[in-house]
Image (cartoon, rainbow, N blue to C red):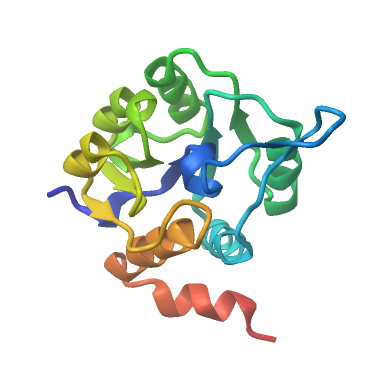
Length: 170
């Protein structure tokens, strides 16, 4: 099992991780996604402690761009056809190494990038192939607090959970 203590960059897939993997289109063709507010609070705390977050998705959605802006996530790579190559570009852009990187994915397209990362995280409802290589499997499903749970796990392993909780103290 890999060590979570060195993780400084958390790379997140979208569909199935930040969302429940459902895609909803309105009558006029507009795509809608549902995000978990607790995941967002965890991302904000992770960032306030000086860590980085990036989004790496095979699909493209303006909703993802909006949510990333709300959470202060500066590195968003959508429409990825090669997640491993794009992961390497993200790591370089963030000034980190793969040894400082955790990736949270849920399905086959995430496997190559996850395998390259130092620490691999997934959701409770991920496909078996992803769960079998994960260092940490959240008890929550994608879009239902799994990202928050993963961040709490990383911070607990790093001895920084109380510090993260204090990010929101008045």
